[in-house]
Image (cartoon, rainbow, N blue to C red):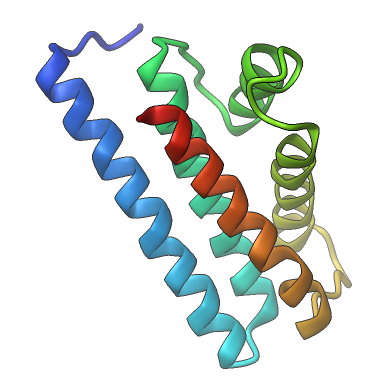
Length: 133
């Protein structure tokens, strides 16, 4: 069932999700600095996921799953050029790496991977935030 929010509540939830995205990026940095690279990738993915959920909410696009959020982002924003293909690739890559890190055996994440992904995650969230304004 699709939730229906009054405009004030909808804006508050969108703002909360973006705030949560930036807070979760800080968690990713903290984990990376401590050498917890799998956890850093997980937190980067969730930071971007929170931003995606805010974006979908703004445009009343409903989804129930992480895969659904990825599909709706691609369908409504990346394929139409509203978000860049680079941003779409960032979310896709983080989704895949987070999923592998959580569910597959012998997955390797290192500082180099995190250092490459982190600025992409920041850019992704910044780009989504710009669409929300």
